Length: 467
Image 1 (cartoon, rainbow, N blue to C red):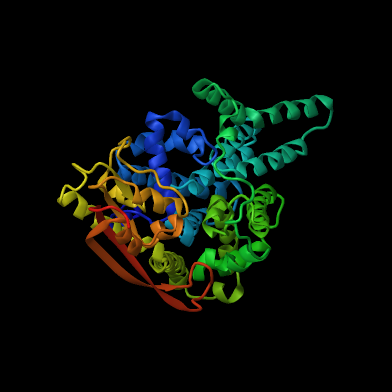
Image 2 (cartoon, one colour):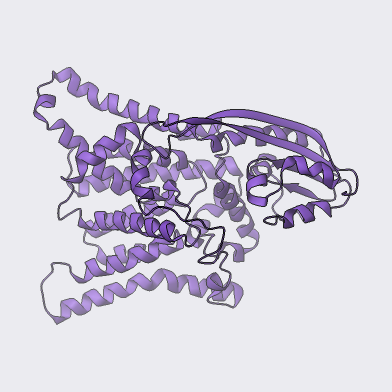
């Protein structure tokens, strides 16, 4: 199903997904690019080889990882001895933002996979291996830095036999939580002669004027929208029965990630802009809580009195309704519709062989590069600048340069509108546009309004000097 979905939607439109894709491609030739904090080194190591086969190949590989994540989530439910553990699979994959990321080059679901594996090792009493896995979570996403200390606290207070040797053994196992960072420092030193390269190459400051924070309650208010119409009631129903001893560590991990992003967005720090998709990194725990809710629902007296045929139909109805909800949410998010304009513009460039003799080539949205399967290290490709520095750069490009610009990422990220290119000496060769009706679904449980987004891509050529 996931592969079929990406055939319909070849690129997700999420800005970071294409940036991660090209980082994977470039890291194969220049390992330094895969060692930065933004690149997520373990994510790069996992995905860089499939990315050599192109965007379709790496997205199929991402779908495979999501399938493994789904299986591991069902087995986590078994470990927790929750009835109907198989239902945890659909409750994971049809969380709307998990479904949106399920075959994408994003880091949230690989992080979720690492987390669920660590939890399963913990419940299997393989504490050393569990700590080892947790030590590498910071190399998938920065939330791992916050998870590791709590993992250590749970290890320290395990209800094992008391005595100094046991405490010493726990402390020894706890040192494994530093393994991942030690490996990163060693690899950075080996590749760059700078063990702290991932810090020195830090790509964003803690605070800057463009980081706009918001309400402390932002994530709380939007959590129903994250779950979707069908699954949010199950999450609510599952809260009380999931508050048990076995669920203590999963709940803490879920709460750490949720509150970390709540506070970062509230304080406007580290580029936190309140994106709910980040919470997909704890989606296995969310699915397990929903499973508790599903079992609670089936245990209600009037539900038990239903005829046997309804007991067989209820799970089917739940899965179909949750799947439909996830697909509706995907369609309603206008960012996903940008792929069609990017593909049409790329087809025009390819069919007319425009890049063959162009001295420079530039794009506003790297989806176009993916659609063209553009060479990884082509010196003619212009590296975009932010804000109005991009305007000056485009004005100075040599005659004959070719570009594909858009009124979404090109305009919003680089502050240059497609209409401005004419004054820079560019002639428009091709235009594609699409109007999409956007409904406020992702941020709300129910649609509270709508608006029309005009998505436009232009193919241009530099024919004269800038005015």
